[in-house]
Length: 86
Image (spheres, rainbow, N blue to C red):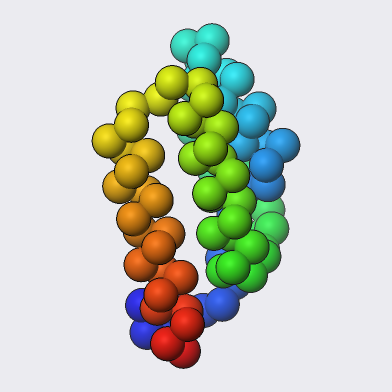
C-alpha cells in the first residue's frame, strides 16, 4: 500500500444505501456511484474503512453473498494493519 494517498473518493453511507436500494429493486446504480465519486468527495482512509465496514454489516443483514463480504472484510483488516505500520 506504499504510495497510496491518505484520502480517496468514496460514497457516504446515505449514497451507498440509495444505491443498494436501487440494486435491490433490480435497477442499475453504476452511474450514480460514478457521478458521486467524480464530484471529488474525499475522506481519510480510516473513515473510508469505517464506512466500508458499516456497509458490510448492512450487507450481512440484507443477505448478500457471505463469501464476497468475508473477502472485503479481510482486505479492510489488511489495510488497517498496513496503516498501523506507517
